Image (cartoon, rainbow, N blue to C red; front, top):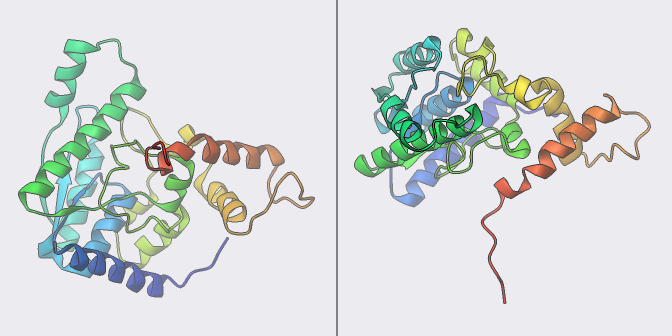
Length: 255
């Protein structure tokens, strides 16, 4: 796995946030605080870059959300002086499905929740005004583990260059509470959901393979000294290839 200087990366990321906001002429950001490590790190970096008065955290629970999620979001906000607003999205989500699609499965409902949260964030960004701060890391972006026009919608991604394992390392350096860092990563879209169970691989292994594939240009089919079984590399390659459309602008006819 690659080695980065965390302290230097913190400064570089904060400069990126500050410069982006300065260039846009908008000094404020709004971010969805889920109680997870990615939104926590993104928010703390924004506070460091812009000052706590320019960061607004939105806590947007659904009725099936884990009770600890909002509690962890509130703890993070308290520790770093981030003002928050809590809006329950249950009435918005349930009204749609009860009327039009009561048979919808967990995936459809989860994606709708993610898009409803982003709708709320963008409405509040217009109210403040502010830029919507993204929370996706490099690992999630490469394998498409985000909802298009949901948590994948934002003005910019401050931690989009960091692998999940690097997100954890930077979070420890910045003093994010250990209960946020150490809990199982989850989008919290339905009960019992975890990132690693959905992806079918642990983050440390996924990060290492993504690093080898995308930065070392290793071709697992031609290598005789793979660190993990070939089938694991093929699984990761499939995650990357089948989500390629999520990382592209909608195609248009050219010429």
